[in-house]
Image (cartoon, rainbow, N blue to C red; front, side, top):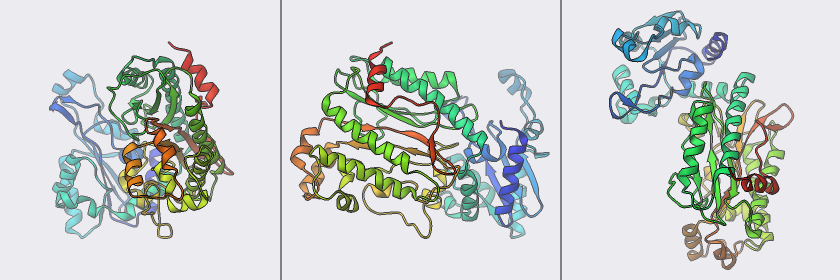
Length: 464
């Protein structure tokens, strides 16, 4: 946990932003794998962590804005629990770590909510993603499960999103700790991967590193020779000489701040000329995007600049043709880069995504596009100092998408399908770093992870 003052200050700021009523926070519970006592690794809810920092199951909290009260609800461990788990702090002892004096057992929470409802008071809560907490909302507030998130408080969502979006120095320090773990994961993968291995051999190796150096993965590892599949979580393919592999992975620190780094490297240690050509287009696109990031610049503008570089690079190797500004405006480039440039990063690897991206990544002036590719841009608003973003352009050759667009004669004025079809077995390339928006520009967080062609080849050739 951070110092208790951090959580006290965060809650005080939130109370100023929310006009009145009760704010209800539900922590996460243990999730059984196949029977009650055999559980998945526990992960606390990020909103609960942000305001209370308590990393244990079966907790809830209420902030009464009108009466300026803060209560944590939970049950002390029984002697039977202690036999299996060892000595445990009381709820009151845990609450004191985040600056809260008032505690109560979990069964009191229902009466607190019922009393508020009887007096016509507003109870604010954020959208729920765990089914057990959706059912808990039903019990506490009487909202049918299928409508739970329809009643989430937009006032609370906006307040929390604006607060969490700007990272403090202590949060940035945590994110850089996570990136240091990513450095080890990425460079180890380059050295460890060899022809004849299965993808899962490498995935398991770097997953173990994340657990030994922090609190584990920030999301399931994407490690695949099929880089054209954006989020490929299958690990059964055998690595072959000449393969490119995409390693999109991240770690969490002990306080659960995340990293998210992607590198693409040749299993054999050497890019082919064709692989190098496409790789350098992606790298130039990423470096261009990084140079464009600064306060007040809309991230959508950065995205469009990045994909324009990709389109110009693809034109230079004969895969696209015509006016590339027009091609990007029409969306023709999305055959090769069908996703957004990046996303917010923090306590969640896609920070605050459960609040609904349109609630913090867009606003009344900036509506989400419906164009293929651009509609997947998770954050488009002007950047502000203290925001942490990922920057992850890519180029992908997806046979099914190529076939569909070619059969529809889509963007034939911009796409050279004869040449594109020669790349059907190429796969994909993605390069990703984590960025902090600074006062006058930006900086790449963490120790530099090799991404220049020569640097990647040097490490990928130095096999363990």
